[in-house]
Amino acid sequence: MASSPSVPAASGLWSRPYLLLAVTALMWGGNAVAGRLAVGEVSPMALTALRWVIAVAVLAVVARRDLVAAWPVLRPRWASLALFGTMGFTAFNALFYLAAHHTTAVNLGIIQGAIPVVVLVGAYLLYRTPIRGLQVVGVTVTLVGVAVVAARGDLAVLATLGVNPGDAYMLLASVFYAGYTLALRNRPPVSGLALFTAMALAACVSSVPLVVYEAAIGAFQAPTLKGWLILLYIGLFPSLLSQILFIRGVELIGPGRAGLFVNLVPVFAALLAVAILGEPFRWYHGVALTLVLGGIWLAEQRRG
Image (tube, rainbow, N blue to C red; front, side):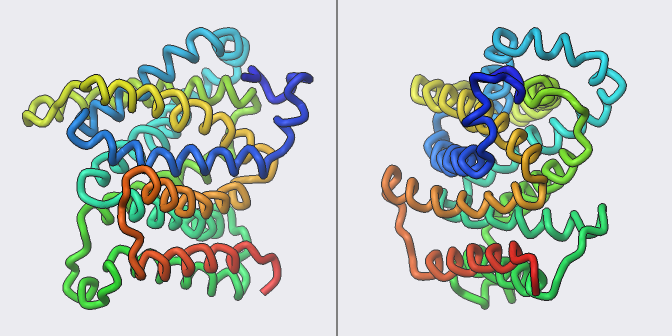
């Protein structure tokens, strides 16, 4: 693992944003499956906290020097870094794993496809990044796709506000991660590894109150053996490696374009959910996936 974007030995792979972001999306798609597998094996808030304990334990070994070297730059920004980590890592994952108790991995992946359009709208509201006519169409089509899967193909469900709570949690989680993606635009000028380590520490600390609350209401479940295996996967890949790759991708091509690679997450999540979990892929999933991916493609067009 490279300790800095400037490491010569890693310059080839480290300078390929599309490959880095595609691998990131694959790991996030796997996270949807892992979240479903974790149901009954470890409680959601315990899963959220322990994934960051694992990630921070690894970072303490591989990123210690990077963090120490970058600390003079990071220290004045500690409050914003804590907010970044809490918003993008703690809040997103807590809602994500809570959602996994109420909806399918296919739904988790498809609804996660809302992130790019939220990033696009947020970039306009915060930075006045222009939105062209075709992008407006793309945003609308994508949101229709998310609504289709949330309504399970039945518009009457939306009319009666009977959306699955898991789908609602996932929508809210997507808003948090979109905000984190936009915030990376103002990241401190340090290596991706040092930046991620600081935010992972913030996520580890900010997830503790969630575990305390979970225990207080009697919902805490310690990991089983299978739960620990799931945690190892989540802690090393979706929590650690994918986040470093995503930060590097944002650094190379910007948050708007990097955020669009989340459109691969629904594809990977659906394929993995069907292959590993045996979840059914219903007609409305196909319609929603087509709308989400088509809408994001339209939103990516520079002319409209």
